[in-house]
Amino acid sequence: MHTVFSDGEVWPTTRVQEAWREDLDVISISDHDDYHPHEKDVTANLDRPFAIASPVAQGLGLLLVPGVEITKGDIHFNALFVKEFNAFRGKDLLTALAEAKRQGAFSFWNHPGWKGTAEWWPPIATAYADKLFQGIELVNGNSYYAEAHPWIGQHKLTIISNSDIHRPSLSAEERSLTLLFVRDKSLGGVREALDSGRTVAWQQKRLIGSEALLTSLFRAYVQVPAEIHPPAGARTAALLLRNISALPFDLKVVETPKWMTVTSAQAAPQSTALLTVRLTKEAPTTRQRVTLRVELSNALAGSATPLVVPVEFDYVP
Image 1 (tube, one colour):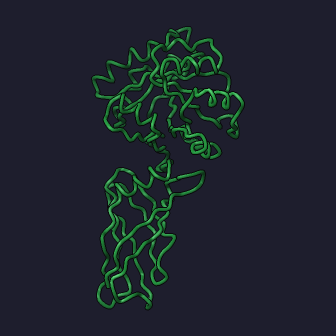
Image 2: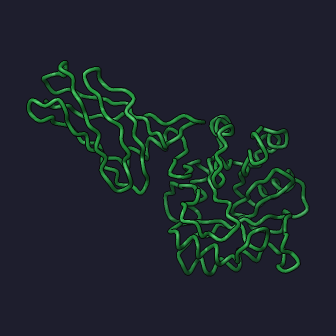
Image 3: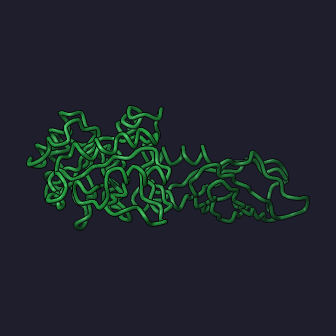
């Protein structure tokens, strides 16, 4: 996110107050190193945004990660956990990324497709070979760079999702953000989760992440009954799935036993989804273990590839 110290339109404390109002846990103000359109009116000293915002963040209990956006032509990177904010100015891309590495920063490639189709350009290949970055911004605002998604697995990169907000946060629309699976709520916990790749992108009520993390999310948050019981003589039953999280899950049943069909539904946050089970006359008359295959239509485990998870319960006639 940006402030008037680069090309944003708000003061650093406003970014903190917006994030607190929207119930976020951690943010980074990452103003551009070499782009300062307000320089006639505001200093280009990049120490200032963090210094101004930090006391307010501490007072509100918000974690503030020191960051800079390394801006070299059309290729941009964010460096998080930097120690010397102004050390990147006037340097070429690879030198600036090497400086970030020297400072122990976590760096990631920003909006790889913002100027067209994303490609693994030679400067990116060189930076990766030199171990100068660890993540990629798969989501930026309303943009999702599907063509970059395969690089996550190929190059073992951490998924990042950002609002990249420049103007005041006034819209009622939820901002794009990164879900971090931390061991403790601290800057150290944030860094460890980033280094370990325990992140999922959140954009417009859609989750984008690894199959393992998305599956763990579903299993942790959606409660499946141990068994279902159709009423005596009935050919229908109710399958109730309880979503205990703040995230929605769009459920599409794609595989069932031949003697059963199951409707699709949305498991809205903090609610119970009703899936109607219909039985054919070939339905068994004794207890059976049932495994459904359910597509989470709003959870992408790959480029345009919704996650499919097993849902298991006992059918008790």
